[in-house]
Length: 541
Image 1: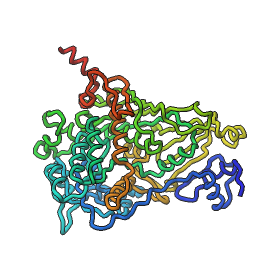
Image 2 (image 1 turned 90 degrees about the vertical axis):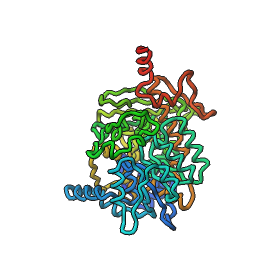
Image 3 (image 1 turned 180 degrees about the vertical axis):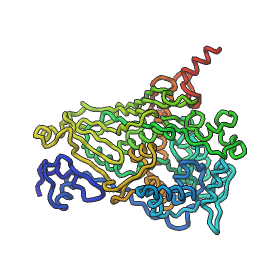
Image 4 (image 1 turned 45 degrees about the vertical axis):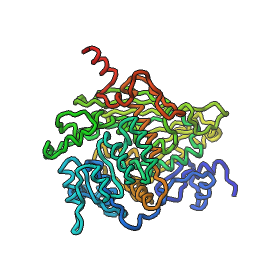
C-alpha cells in the first residue's frame, strides 16, 4: 500500500490503544482501524505501555520502613498497606463526593508479595500508627530504635527510606553496605560528597538501589521519549518547566501534631549531622524550609522536573547552572528560597536536526518556581520543527518556521495553532483531586498514569518494578546513575543560588569545577544565601 505525506499526517493520532489520541487538524478521519494502524506503523510513533515486569514470586520480600510521615504513608499504600486513619478518611470523602475513588482504587490495586516487618521513626505517634494499622492476628511489626538496628537485624531484605533529606545518604549507604535493598526518596543525597560515597556503595553492593522518581512509569513521558527520538520536534533548544503553588501545604507549612513534644520525639536522632539546636516542632514537621535538613526548591521540586525531562531526553548533567531568587512569599523564618529561577546549560546536547548539519546544537533547561502563585504553567519542549507540552497529557504543535513540515504548512495541511498530535491517556476517566498541591503533582504526571483508561498509581508501578528486580534481576528505571545525575544537578542549582555565581561541571573528571576558597558542602549546609552570610560575618568582625 502506498501512503502519501497527507495520509501519514492524518494517521499521526489514530492510535488503536488506550486513551484518546488524535490529529486535531485532520479534515477527515482515516477509515478503518486497520488503516489507522498501518499508517501509525509507517510513522513509527506509538504511545508506550509500562514495561512488563516478571512476577514477584517466592517468599515475601521483608520490608522495613524508615520514616512514616506524609511520604512514608504514601509509599506504604503503594506497597498495599493503608493506615486505619486513611481508610476512614477516604471512606468519608467518598460519601461526600462519589468522584473521590482513592479507596476504591487502592482496594483494586494489584497485591505485591511484601511483608512489612518493621518501622523506624523518631516520632512515637507515627511508629505506633504503623504498628496498629499493619499488625495482624499472627504478626506484629517490630519498632526499631535506630535505622542501624533495623538494617543490621537480619530481619529485613529491603528498606524504604522516606526521611528528611539529610538522612537519605547515610541510611542508604548503611543498607547497601549490608546488602539490604534500598528504595530512597529524592533527592538522593544532601551534599556533593555524599553523592560520590553513595554511588560507590551502590556499585559495590549486591543490593538493588532505586530512587523514588515514580514519574518514570508515566505513559506520557515514555511516549514523549519515543516522539523526541523519532525527530518529530527537531532540534530542541529550550525547555521551560515550572513549579506553581499558592497554599500552606505546598509551601511546606505542614500541620504540627498536637502530641509532639520532647517526650514523644527523639530530637537528637532527628538532628543527626544537622546543627545541634534546641527542640523545635516547626523544624521537625516543616523541615523542608531549612537547608540543615532539606534541599529547598532545588532539591525538593526541581529534582522532579529535572528527572522527568532526563528520562525523556537523556540529557545528563548540565555543563553549567545559574540560579537566582529569594524568600519573597513566606517570610516565616525559612532559609530556603520560595522563589527561584534556574538555568541549566547543555551546549553539546542535540536531538538531531532537520536543517543543514552543524547549524543547531545546544539546549537551555529553564526551571522557574514560586510558592506564592498557583497559575498553571505547563512544561514546554521547544524544537525547531514543533513544540511539545508535556504532563499527564501530551500535545505537539508544528512550528511556523519548521523545515521538516514546511511544505505542509505552506499548503495549510498543518497550522501552527492547531496540534498535530494529542495524547490523553485518561480520556473519559473522572478525577477528583483534594488539594491544590495534589493538582500540581497530577498535572505534572507525578501522581498516576493510565493503563487502558484505568488510573494507576505511578508510585505503585515504580515500587513494583523495584521489587521485581529484587526477585528476578534486571535494571530499575531510576537507579544510581540516574540518581547521581539528579543529585549533582540539584546541588549545582543550590550552590549557584547560595554563591550568586555560575557553577560548572567537568565531565572528564566527573566533578564540579573547583572555586578557590570555597568548600561546596560547607556552602550547601549553611543557612541561607552564602554571600549575604559572609557579608554579615565580615561586618560583625
